[in-house]
Length: 211
Image (cartoon, rainbow, N blue to C red; front, side, top):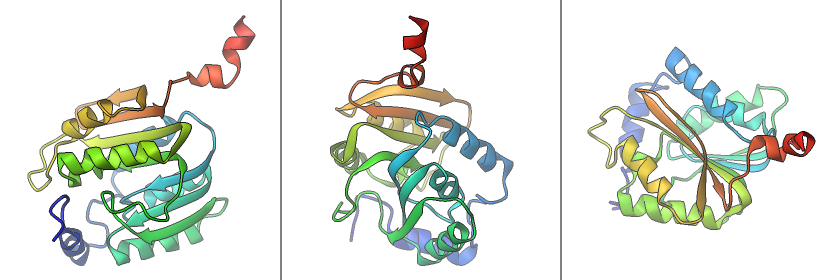
């Protein structure tokens, strides 16, 4: 049994009770959080994105509108099926591959990315497993690529870590430079760059114009 993260059965039981256990499709809280998540992305478009724990694909569709290729993963087959249907019915998206995979599992055949989005998944892992996963993400991020972490900050007794602990571990991970953050009483959002961080204005040439 894998004791480094919550077992797959934990999530499978949730989805047997409800097709969208967290109300990701309907809650204003979630719509607002997703809007802030996508707005915080430093690049207008990405080459290749990884989204572990995609659930029913609400954020997946928003990310797929900003990239050429996206790999969306989950451990629950029914959630992946809903995600596949959602992206298939949404025009103008990049290529989306749905795979059964969880953060903390071996990285085999996933490849490299210029954006990894950890939305509400980091606290499903024990601290050592999360650190190992973040180190692996750094190794598979393109230079200058981005890691976005966004997590609930209220108590969740079933989870091995709190949202605050997840973000402290991310901030201490070698190879990541903090670029942007947002805090409110409900969730924290951090954007990191692999290597030195550059401002969006600099990347867009605005600082050169100012000179």
